[in-house]
Length: 220
Ligand SMILES: *Cc1c(COP(=O)(O)O)cnc(C)c1O
Image 1 (cartoon, rainbow, N blue to C red):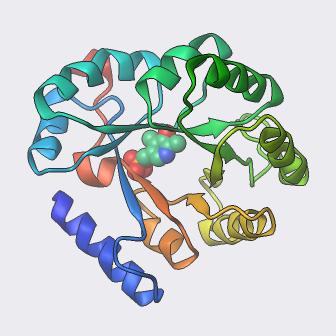
Image 2 (spheres, rainbow, N blue to C red):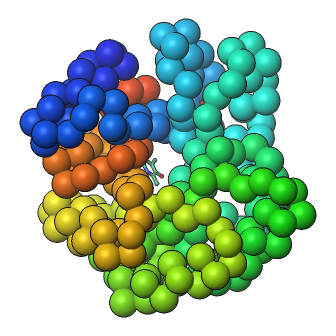
């Protein structure tokens, strides 16, 4: 789908929810997409992208930034502590803060580097054993722990279970953010971003709807 169609759907969803135009940031998730597809979206003026692996982001974005200037890159995938420094240097935002060890590492590096990307705490709203994220019952305490470390927590992020109604998870995440005084909500992907916006999303992460199906590296 053309980028402009996604943008108009976002604008319509903002209006339908009585929200201000431009209150939702579209993160174009470019992971595993061939460079020409990413360049096509850059050529249309879009400057906010999402990646789920630090190494892939490091291979891709310095080159594109040389050509296109400033681009906001949001890390939306799991972050190992030994990649934290590289992620912080490369990304404007990290949506996958999901455990105390990572929070401690980010805090130490933020002090040392004098700067820190905007951070989202990832919540495992579906309590799925294989999925990353803080459990809902532990979220308030973890947000407090991050704040005690002076980390710039902007909001919460979730990836609902594939086989469940996403609206329930979006509503739960919004409730948890509100009770923690957090305004950022990173939720909604290609198939459900309009629902997420109705429930308060401030950042939607849309990949395949913009770029087409992801092409596995081996098949390119
Ligand atoms: C890949 C990915 C997306 C985008 O998924 P689409 O269904 O292609 O829009 C969003 N969020 C996360 C965390 C992802 O890993």
